[in-house]
Image (cartoon, rainbow, N blue to C red; front, side):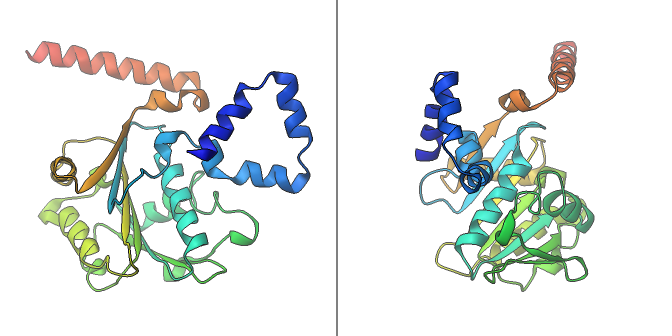
Length: 247
């Protein structure tokens, strides 16, 4: 990808040359460079190539799933004024606190004139160009029956409560409403967990209906405290010991 290649070129420069390159940028260019996600993102945090309809990022905590989701939504909103985006979390509270207002959420990823207005009482984000996003709870599947969307971001789908098949009902109702625009697209981000909805998506991956990006905490190790990697190492060793003990 061109942006990734430019970043690699910049990183590959000798320190003095890199400093010279950055020094030649004016303040506006520096701000743009800092805010331009495709330039800084790891390749697996960017949308896959091809004509996909559903993109699933299934990776460990700290991978950067929320940032990838928020940046994808912001990019859609900037480029598609008619976009109507569903933001579906395990609850309205989590959709707001993580997907919208979180440290890696939509508002944190929005800059300057492209920052949306968030109306919490209406569960709605509105961008200056007219694009809109609406918050939904997967625990309320009926709220997704009827509304139509052009795009959707579903966060932590393996965590959705599936009592009385609520999680799968919410997913199916959302899919039925994905009929605005020429190419409706849905991104799901989650940590791995053996739940019916995730198993179903993996089955659909085998049929070519879902594009899956897999990863681990270590993929983002350069931006995480050392204590996180140490903790994950401990959890991995414990899980491996548990598996051996069960044999």
